[in-house]
Image 1: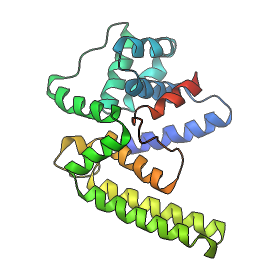
Image 2: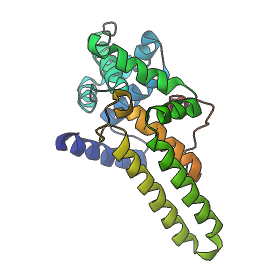
Image 3: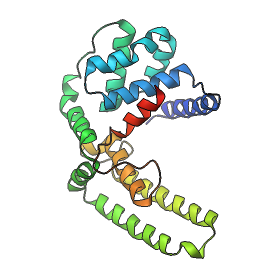
Length: 226
């Protein structure tokens, strides 16, 4: 990930925090989030496009800025870009680039599988993930057992650090910052599924039902924003 993209994401986050405090996030942040959610939760191109078209057409500059925040290297970002482009030009969505059809299809399939099945497939492709999660589970169990020995603030800090360190191990193993040879495991979707699995172990919200898909966790966020 390049430095300019990182800076833009931090700028978006800062604006989002400011906007949410006043109940009115910036248009480009709102459109980016809406396009991202629809890219994952709605399988139908037509319905996903209908869900964002009005906002995009009313705020074309913000939509263009939102588009720039996505990368087309992975399924979720690429589909969000194609959604925004179609809405801006009043046209049907363009198909996935031929060279990306297979890899994006695998990412979409993983995102729509029940979380426990998706994570099991990831472990079958990268066994080191099992070691990371088992070590985290053992460490968290020990931390829970010693909870009475610490102040609430100290315990929360230790729990946070333990989760952060486990997520960093995940980042070194899979995801876009890794050098993993498997394109599926270099995706944001696989990285985020592993993050969800770790949060479920620790009890850190938001929890993802292991029998529901990773994508489905955004359906409630989508409903809350309507």
